[in-house]
Image: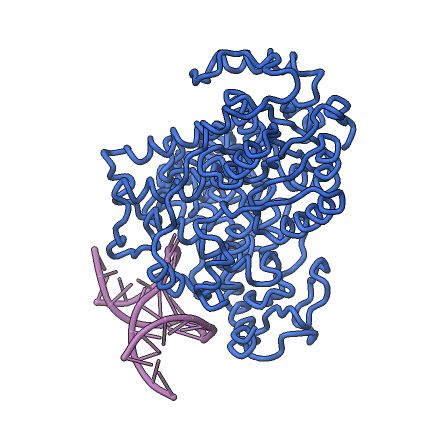
Length: 579
DNA sequence: GGCTAGTTGCCTGT
DNA sequence: ACAGGCAACTAGCC
């Protein structure tokens, strides 16, 4: 992976400050970046913005093409806006743990600034990076910015223990008040900074702010060529992905609205949503009432993708929503269902992910119920590829692979189907698939919602099972959504669109879709299987086993048999509470 | 220590 | 259209 090293960088600068971009691909409301600007000004040295393309973050098993494309597009946008302030984004490739200290040494940096990431793996990596940098005498300064509140501060307000439920969390939020206002990028100081190398170099593209659309692409291609020598161009997706290791997506799928990467695109989208329907889209927002079948325009903001990579700060999002009148209590539905509430769910789940050990796993996670999920690679693969034989599930899974974006309730449907509803496969397998395929993947939200849907944590009414037919009928009664993502069913009449296996053979023939040949037969009898699974759930609840950090085997041990007596014998209530 | 309510299901009976 | 069943966890409140 380290094929392209930076000869160019060595001995280029006497001294500089590095801002290491990670999940903060924006200029606005970026405390770490502003601090780096200010430190550079104080030192009178250039600011070098750095991004590292790292296999453990961008590799194909954890980051699919859709998100990778979105990140690269966002990087190009970031690069342009940095350039307009006289700064050149450096792109390095390799294991960040090694590359960051190497790069800092090569460019003679005095300090490295970055915004803190909060998930377990990133925290571990950053600790190692910090040690590596300190060893060579480089200072490290990290700042909060990913969530609404600094999680350490938030936990202190909660007496060291994050509330386990949303209600308690909202009480806490009421106590501490709204998050602080976003801060603007310090352009003035940034513009005054010395420039790397021999001044402006070839960065003379009129800067200011032009419309980035049609001509932008060719412009980027051109400038990419020019930069080829310099080792700091944003790679294209083809540089990073061999040929088409793509998920065989059926021909003729009509994807949904595409999300354009970048900070400006994020802000444009945010403002468009706050103005939608004269502000009613924000004021009357109620999550459970938004349609999972709406694709263009989508029923929700889809801004999660930008928040997940930090092209939009959660504080900016929060305050725009409040300023647009989205500060209501959500009426019947409660605050939780409002748009502001969505950001508070995010905050809630991050406060837990940050403080509960092994939050992204069942094993060793004191919040997560132990359930004897089965290991079935073939069934998992059918779910992943959208070949379950249930049009609603398959359309959603195809949407996941094509668009990388699925409405929340659609995610519920497929998650319930994979886990407690039908296939009885571990939520961790589902979470892995989502991590790879979602454009808005977020460690805390992904793990929390999978635990929620699988009744492993937070939610426990396991008899509420999503039906792949009834629920589909509720939101997509005429089958428009199905036909968009499953070309084989395009001519299937409405009457059979959600249960094509019930169509008489003559109807199937006329529709050009023989079930079992052109489209699979349903892989399970949903009614029968889900009924059986509810019983298994009941048993799992009465066993009351939970993960526990003290008595668990190492987390990477994939457990298929969980009823053994290794850990968590006590009833849940006793165990989970005290840890 | 008891009571209440909880972001978003489905099916059946009235 | 709507209530009750499914089966019963857990936190927060009094």
